[in-house]
Length: 183
Figure 1 (spheres, one colour):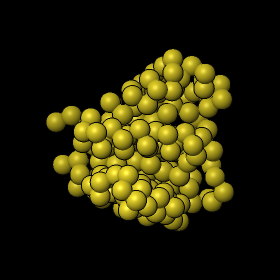
Figure 2 (cartoon, one colour):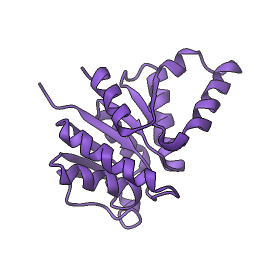
Figure 3 (cartoon, rainbow, N blue to C red):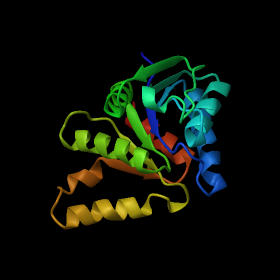
Figure 4 (cartoon, helix red, strand yellow):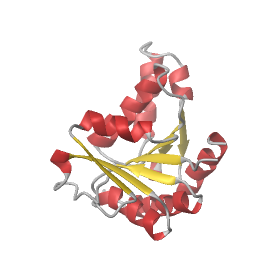
């Protein structure tokens, strides 16, 4: 059986709460301990760096994908198991999603939301059937969940859109969902 790969979308900054970085470290460690590969944006800054370093320190495989124009800004982490450089952001997103069995959205900004919405849209269109999990550290994604419920309530998406999402308040909860969904 081939090991599973988990794509993490997260911030290239640490954010204001120390729990964001703590959860990134726990999640990276847990993915490695499960024997799964981390797929992420290949940065060595912010939550991206935290999740990758934790996975590496726990002996896990890491697959990073970064576009040329972000190599210096996100400090491309070249000591990964696999380091892929793309030409565009769109290509980065495609390579990340196609090399993963599941997606986890941790706290992050516009880039993380862009990645998440593309994965969610592709799921809605039937282009993949991968689980999508929100790591809702300290309720970070509560407004996003409310927005998606509003979109459904206003008739701009079927209620099934909400069924494509799982949510957990801790890395342990994320791992429980992934263990269930990836078997």
